[in-house]
Image (cartoon, rainbow, N blue to C red; front, side, top):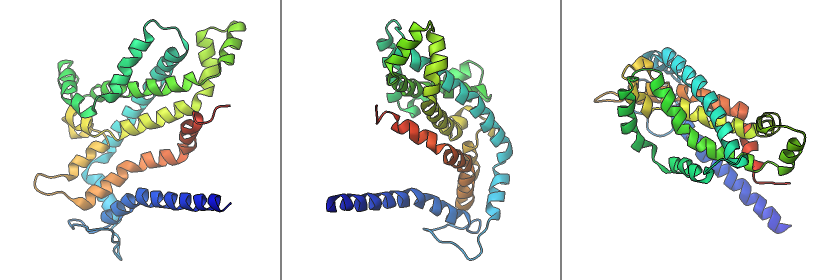
Length: 274
């Protein structure tokens, strides 16, 4: 009993420390964003008269309205396609007899090991050769390809945990592979699919490097690309930079708050098997 109580106390302390370390950066950014423009905030300090107008100024200076539209279009195009392709691919690798699927699966694993930064230069020349620079397709196509390796591995792991009895029962009832996938396994995989959608949304919405490299027109970049507006050649407006960063992060934080139960359910799906 004493040991159980000690473990509980230690666990609560570790949880509290984790929460503090996770929340502290956001508090620091908020305190910096509420300082007078042009100042250099040091540490966490809140003024008696916070400058909430900095968020309005950051929105106007970075011209976030068209960037918000660009990011929304990007997410609407990338996330559904990645989820569809990865769900189908993961099911094929996990349940179907695909020729040389083990060999093909290695390529997706290799895709997870390649640092993203090493792909930027080849992507630039490839997109330039296709004549797609400074277009929305310049971001949509690479982001679909870059998110698929992780999505395939994620969904394959999910479908491999499906009960074989369901597959056999569906086969006895005359259901084909597509009917089994659509009517039986896909509903059971909704937590994993939801989590994949959230992760893909985060990776797409927060994309900064590709937006700066592949989009020459600042108005065609993403919300994350708006951070470049606060970085000058000789000076950076730290106050507006923090205000803009918080504006950019707000949609992802709101989405995660509302969909966190699906994400947590998928994280725990493979930990308990009955």
